[in-house]
Length: 340
Picture 1 (cartoon, rainbow, N blue to C red):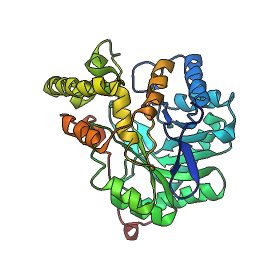
Picture 2 (picture 1 turned 90 degrees about the horizontal axis):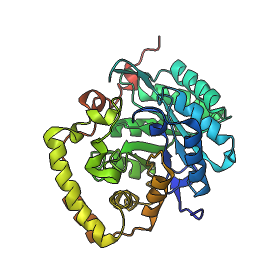
Picture 3 (picture 1 turned 90 degrees about the vertical axis):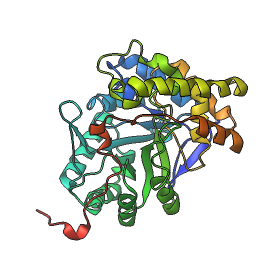
């Protein structure tokens, strides 16, 4: 697999593997953290298979996922890895979080991530969520300085609104926008994705397997740990879940014809969105990773894409309300800004 297809993200020169590896679930979000050595083995297997794009964030853990990635990088050639991390979310109780994008915080987070990852630079540094109290130009100004200092190579935004993306890109080119995009989450399609394409910004879909639903199906909810945040996802609860189980069965009929798994079909749908799209499915198991890579061999015609989309009429929100409130936000105009 090491002749993995490469994708150009943005117009600044960043190239990544067509499929990346989202590392969040190794330490965060999906039940207890997994044993370090097992996860390092998964990361090394991914890289040996041609996956060079590793995605983490300072909030995963918090902090422990970056430390894990730092350990995994020890056995790898740093210049062959595209390392992405993020800043901007501060954990609160339950789903209450705080978002910060002020220059002091931007710099402090970057320095701390460099230390935890034990690297000299971060390839792709994302604003994880948008601080609605601070014009994006102010946040970007500090990120631009970090690029000039060689601490980060490229700048990304995660779950940003179209207006914010434009304004940020005017300060310094944005290389990638990360958003949830899959057969059951398509809310970025009307505005965000066209804006990225107009500006030549790469698109990095997270949760392309529906947070595991397309890989595992309704069984996903069995034996789920108490602290798995998917238990709180509206589309995996009650009537929504009953409806989505039926949709899963309908889509599964197409799998028989294609001779692949449903996870591979769902991932192939994302991969077919264009040459500027580099999804980052997460996994903690080598066999699942191999399955994900198999999606590259699944070819879909325009008719099959349309058929899949017509079948995939899922119900329910993709995240709990409290977290959805932080998506696709815009910031106040720069003219309103009074530096303290």
